[in-house]
Image (cartoon, rainbow, N blue to C red; front, top):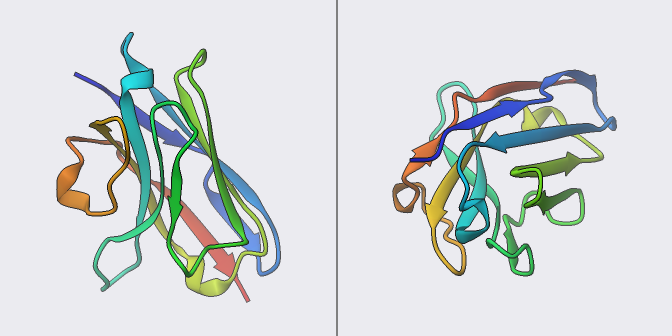
Length: 124
């Protein structure tokens, strides 16, 4: 079992930055791929970024490439999402998810554990 807790969301102006954190329980954190998904009101949950257990393999959605950066600190059981140059269309609830894997996935159904989400609101 893995429990995930997101933090770091908030209200920011367009062009600003936020850093989200996803803290996980458990002693085998490095064996889990972690992904960030987001869901805006009235829209489906969409993939943002995923990072492999080692942190050496990442995948980004085209909409965030060059603006968002994921990283992880396995000693702290935490994954980070640095979000720069934020746009109003980035407004959503951001969720982190975990899956036991040597790589990473971009489909939500492939992740077994989910956090409660953190709200990110970008004003224009």
